[in-house]
Amino acid sequence: MIQLKLKQKILMSAAVMALGITNYSAHATSDSAATDEKPTAFIKEVSLIDTNSTEIGTVTLTESPTGVLFQLTSMNMPEGSHSFHIHETAACTPSEEFKTAGGHLNPDNRQHGFLAEGGPHAGDLPNIQVNAEGHVVAEAFNSRVTLTGAKGRINLMDEDGSSIMIHQNPDDYLSQPTGGGGARIACAEIK
Image 1 (cartoon, helix red, strand yellow):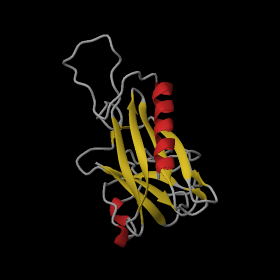
Image 2 (tube, helix red, strand yellow):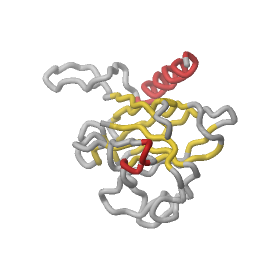
Image 3 (cartoon, helix red, strand yellow):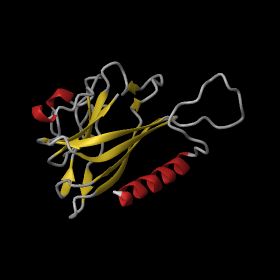
Image 4 (cartoon, helix red, strand yellow):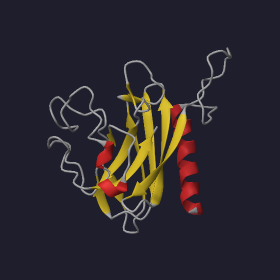
């Protein structure tokens, strides 16, 4: 677990440097303080649970001026490629196979997938790869969403929130309406 947290801190530092953020905290800054400093990032960490309600990792979400960076660190997952999506509601109920989270986040009624004409959904993210030991460290950036209500993007933390979902199978980025992801195997509530 210590190794997992260390990897997460290293990834966060790299992401912060890549985004050009020199001063960050877990809260957004106030507009009332007029300084020459760059604004701080809004960062939210959510727990990823499996179908047994066991915490198996975290997803760190970092708001940037152009979207949200998702950093996933997890263990005890099935080896291979898996779909990685944002779902409609912050409701991860393992006893209901995470169906309480609703479908893919898609308020604009677009087609599913990066390869589909008229796509992607706002909640579409690239597949993740889990190694033979069941570990995954992955990053994805989504310019269609926001954590802070930035104008022109879909707010993940609206009144019913949203969820990060990992599916059993990889996304083919084309099949409708879900890309062939199959069973929901892990979920994290964003609220």
